[in-house]
Image (cartoon, rainbow, N blue to C red; front, side, top):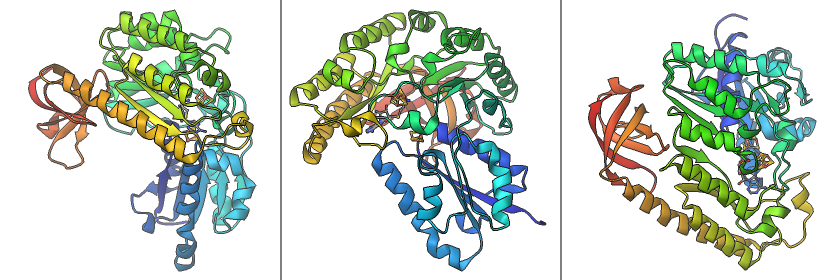
Amino acid sequence: MTGEKLLYIETFGCQMNVSDSEKVAALLKSEGYAPTADSSAADLIIVNTCSVREKAEHKVYSYLGRFRGLKRERRFLLGVGGCVAQQEGERLLKRVPWLDLVFGTHNLHLLPEMVRAAEQGERRAAVDFIDNETRLDLFPRADEAGGATRFVTVMQGCDNFCSYCIVPYVRGREISRRSAEIVEEIRNAVAAGVREVTLLGQNVNSYGLKTPGELTFAGLLREISAIDGLERIRFTTSHPKDISPDLIACFAELPKLCAHIHLPAQAGSDIILERMNRGYSRQEYLAKVAALKAARPGIQITGDIIVGFPGETEDDFLQTLSLMEEVRYTDIFSFAYSPRPETAAAAFAGRVARKETQERLDRVQELQRDMTIERHAGFVGTCQAVLVEGMSKRGDQLYGRTDGNLIVNFAGDPALIGSLVDVRITRGYPNSLLGELTTVQ
Ligand code: SAH
Ligand code: SF4
Ligand code: F3S
């Protein structure tokens, strides 16, 4: 085939999908596909999907629907990857007849071959799990991607089986990547200008625990922290049950480790936590939060909350609100419970009415909005080290993040993108801070 072919990728879902989309782009580059931001010019469109809640899954089908007519107008290939692909497999090819290929969360490496087959008119679905470590090492590293911040996958999959969650079914068993490989990737990234890394996994705290001879997550953090030229380390997501005293100690010991942790509680009532199969009690969760705050005063804590879980009473719900107040989260993501195929909770009795669930969600969001505004106001007058990530959406200001992961907008020279600067905070908004540049560090 002559001439350049164009690839458009649409990504739904979490950071894991964003990271997989980067790998897809890198893999298909060697097949002659260059990235485009214009789907109407693409020869191949890949949709990377999320199925964590019903709504996310519906969004995928309505998105795919729009290509039906377009397929009659011009020739292009349409592929679906990610968690809905994993969940549905062959069924997706039947349900969406204008679809050319389906690849699951463990099958990225098969894409070049599948795309070649699709170019010949063959429709394939590949969704087998490959439970070995090699697949983590198959991917070309995206060293060419610029920027001062980088996500680095350290583990994949999840073995926790929270009773509401589809992730263990669509991402497979937990596998940790080799620490030597992770450290090498970060060294190379730092040499290419990266100053901050975010270590990525469904449950990073259990890193290495099932791999004989491997470092623990705390051990991995210490190794990464020793890399010269790297300024900041973040990680996401943490499961509260696997936060070890050694990991908490890292927040006291390692200045490069940022003062922020995303630590989803999901609920505040012991009965609900038990039924969610979360593996910790309210008291255990709060004790870990207190230990984190003691290890790193000023640490920003964010989390996830689910309301309307089967059997959740008004009293259970009030305990979620009181937990939020005790932790005083900087911010949270909050969700209405959504039953998912294969999960244990989908068969639980005591479904909470939609109206009730929505009302609880509103109350959670109202409480959090007030706490977030108060937190943001507390920063006014302080000076924060900010890693400048780019131009704000309006294009007239720079934006970056504080050590505690708050977004700050401020006026400044675009040449500062990629550097750490000092910013005095002048105003707090519900979603961000406003500031002014003081000195360049
Ligand atoms: N591995 C991460 C993220 C999982 S998905 C973790 O364990 O924290 C992100 C969030 O989606 C979860 O924390 C949970 O709050 C929410 N979620 C997952 N399944 C859900 C469901 N069935 N209904 C509503 N929210 C759900
Ligand atoms: Fe889902 Fe629980 Fe695993 Fe998070 S820890 S991905 S909520 S099963
Ligand atoms: Fe969604 Fe899959 Fe991530 S279900 S949240 S894209 S792991």
